Length: 200
Image (cartoon, rainbow, N blue to C red; front, side):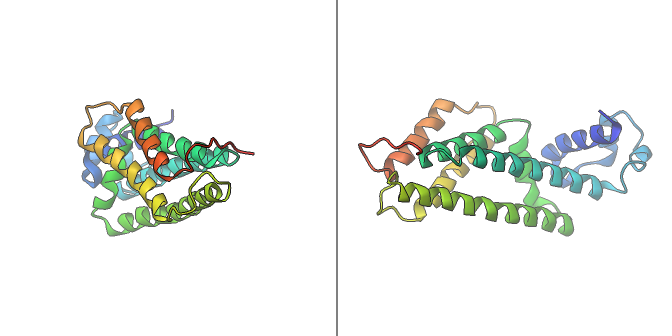
């Protein structure tokens, strides 16, 4: 690992704990260099934080896109389940949930705007993909025809609720069977009962 990458990795860890209050001197100590030496790699603290933000947001949405492609030939239920499990698994590791929770509280307005725009742009694409998946479920008879589009928002709210619980109770491991039970309860509320559906 080169020094620049090492600095960014350490910056991610500190940002997860302290957000924009990340200290350059603390970062230098974390990678065993003197503070002035950081500036041979980066112009300033804001450049470091921006790179950390861009890298992690890109990593998350790239993996999410890969999962969407992987699920494209599956049934609606299978696709929604894969994405649900992926999001919970992603946020269960490496302080990632704390990273995302710190983004709205960045005091630097430019960095705040950059992160908000990156998320909004990627969320718009993800929402479109989820709408297509949901429509597929309606078209192929997996989802009851009387189910409103609000059921898709409920799906996203369900994921958010799990993540909020993880943030509030960080010492409790996510119980996959509980998360699975929650998804099945959601699906039972929107599916056509008594029929098994598989991707063609």
